[in-house]
Amino acid sequence: MTNNLLRKFIEDRDYDVRKTGNGRWIDQKCALDAVCFVADCIVDYIRSGGEQHFQSPDIWHSEYAITNVQHLFSKPDPTIRSTLDEYNKFFRQPMKMLAAAGVLREDGLLHNTIQFSVENIDVLEYIALRERNSFEFLCLYVEKVLKDSGLWDSFASFYDEQSKETLQNVKKHFSDFCIKHTPIGTKVEANRIFIKVLNPLACKFHKKGIVKGRLSPSMITYDKIMYNQTNWRDDAVGKDKNVARGNFIHAPKNDDMYQYRITRAMKYLKQFNDKYNAGRSEVLDKFSVGEIATHMHHIFPKNQYKEIADYIENLIALTSGQHLQAAHPNGNTSIVDHNYQYTCLIAKTESIRKNIMSNHGETVIYRFDAFMYILDVGLKTDYFEALPSCDFKSVLTGIEFNYEN
Image (tube, rainbow, N blue to C red; front, top):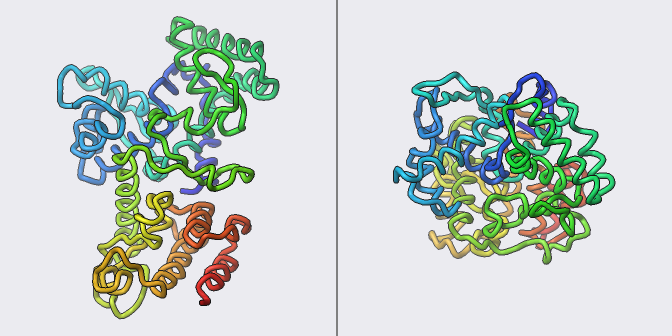
């Protein structure tokens, strides 16, 4: 799954709310990080042998969800009966949105509870992999729904003019539409959803949005559309060119979220490598002969490069011998062999090139711009971000240049 394939997936669908009457095509809990997390929990549930048909409680009762949701989203213990309504909303609302988008499917009711199944696993995994993917999905999906439903003109006018008057106009237009075409019966209820429609696109277009019911004083930034706003760490892919890296990168504020993202990236790389590379190492050398790659190694060490530790492009699948003898001499994980780091980068470049440019139906898990970012950070240059998309020949040239000495 690539951004272009995601765009095609969305463009091929009719999301006209006037036809579906679905007032829950998006909802209050559908912030990009919450959607990403719920998608990840569903993928983990399916990969762990869960039933193909599932309900919201099946997902948040899973060990993986229970382990992570309390720490990551400051939620109470999901096993306590009094938390039932809160958890149902937190998980069910993104699930209903994903079903409205065609990523999941609603399969009727069982004991008055919605049954879901996965309609498109590739899109679900794409959303689950990282928050930036979830953001891109939400923006493409929301814009398509607005256009299909005849709502786009008022939103476009607001993004163009950015005044209190255009904000009130688009807000009224949206609430009147919801009351007319969906079961949403009040302006108050419609306005609760309105912010989840307006602000993601405001962020994408670098425009003002809505904050506490009023026109925001400045443009909506990535952190303002997160569920965990106080625990947010910038995703540097897609940063504005005029924002200096030193001003853009923030140290992780929540160690649990930081560790979760690292573990998630390592999990997805191992699953991908096991499925599409038969578990082999990405580096072919004497330590890889006859061995399976069980170690997901940080090419640029996570203790030195925290801002790129959770990027899947900074991870490479190695055997235990490669990891503990070659990458880290004598098993000392505080030391990185410079020559082997170069070997890993060359191999990773080829892995990413094949996945993006010449794959044979496997899921696309890498982003070229993300790889350029980790190279610039790890090698302390600005060379890679200026490269044309998918110019892998120049990538290799840049890596060679930085390891000449």
